[in-house]
Amino acid sequence: MADDRIARASMFLASGTIVSRVLGFVKAIVLAATIGVVGSASADAFAVANGLPNTVYVIVAGGVLSAVLVPQIVRASAHADGGSAYINKLLTLALVVIGAATVVATALAPVLAWIYGGRLPDSTLQLATAFAFWCMPQIFFYGLYTLLGEVLNARRSFGPFTWVPVLNNVVALAGLVVFGLAFGFDATGERPPGDWTPGMIALLAGSATLGIAAQALVLLWFWRRIGLRYRPDFRWRGVGLGAAGRMAGWTFGMLLLTTFAGIVQTNVVSLASGDDASIAAIDSAWLVFMLPHSVITVSIATAYFTRMSEHARDGKLDLVRDDLSGAIRGVSLILMLATAVLVVIAYPFAAVFQPGDLANASALGNVIIAFAIGLVGFSILFVVQRTFYALGDTRTPFVFTLVQVIVFTLAALASTLLPVEWIAVGVALSTTIATTVQLILAVVLLRRPLARLDGKRVVVSLLRDLAAVILPIAAGVGLLIALGGFRDDGFAIGSRVGAIVSMAIIGSVMAVLYLGILWLLRSPELRGFAEPVVARLRRR
Image (cartoon, rainbow, N blue to C red):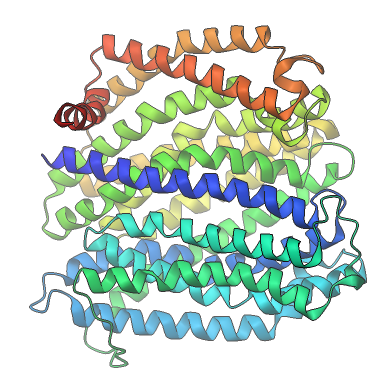
């Protein structure tokens, strides 16, 4: 019964993420039609400004809140008041910190814009700075969204956290359409920075911030639905916030490490800028790579995380072990297929960005492949990391993240020895290698608190998934060749429509074959996912 609840929760979360991601891609297309994308000074300025709030938020509090909130709130729920006092105190403290960070970052908007866009022409940098003043309030609303959403997750109200980003995308899309109708669409990006008026800047950047604000504020309504009431409480002593602070400290250190790795990555791939796959290719490939992870892994892990935290609070380590095993096997079942599909359709996927040019499609496609082969390991690591968080341990994740950053840095620097056209691929492979090392170390370290892991069942499941994907890969490659996936004028490369249709055909055939083989192999994980769906269909 518990596994059925997990499966239903995971499916509901995944559906919200899918809808949000689809709208996100639509928003990206409309944004390109509104201010351009390639060779557009306006688009470059807006990209710098609109990316700053998320960067600052992640450094200040992003991972800290996700790692700390759910386990601490679950533990506090054992208190006589159900954890209400603790939630109010922790929420008040977090909002004060995030609010202060927002004020400081807004005041430093010109400095931050210069750090990230200092090589832009002066007029473009000035426009980026103007955008940044309107975008910086997003920091506070990102924090509010995470705080309110994670409390809902801890109270087993999973849906709102993944579905309300749909509202964000709808508001932002509306703002883009209004901007285009009022000031004209500029798909070629020819509007110079000097032509932007204060009203234009306020509408474009302000609507982006309004979307983030709406996404956060609507969660207050869901709080009231489950009986939560927020009352600011500045009496922070004596309620165990010291433990949360220690956990947050290690997580903050981990975020600094990953920020350093990001700086190394950007500097290495920039060596190919202007000639071959570089920063834009890495960003685009990572966006593709993260799609199955965010839809599948995050949804499944989120549904398991609260239950893990409850079992850890009660000292039921055998049940934590079962949760870990179930999450890994469920994630791997789907991500093994996703990995295979991404590897096969990498070139058509790249052609969606740059159709009709096999050289450009293969340059980006190879980066996608280099990331994709590490997808299963990356997603398992995500689950293992969340298990440490459920156990109240953020120090150990800091240790294996430090090792990952060292391995990545060395491998990325070694990539500078490659021919310039292969540097981005080398950096992507560096990420895959470093993540694999990190996963191995994390699993070894997890044996200490859990005594033993459900290793045999997990390995058997992984090998079964791997065996089931061999035939689909062969069929997918055959279809790719038949659809002209290796020719400039091929159906799969020559146009965006052809690329999308080819991906749909190849992905569908591979999925049917994979799931069919797993069903014949009597995969318990597949049957666990399928039974709630079949039961619901039978009731209809």
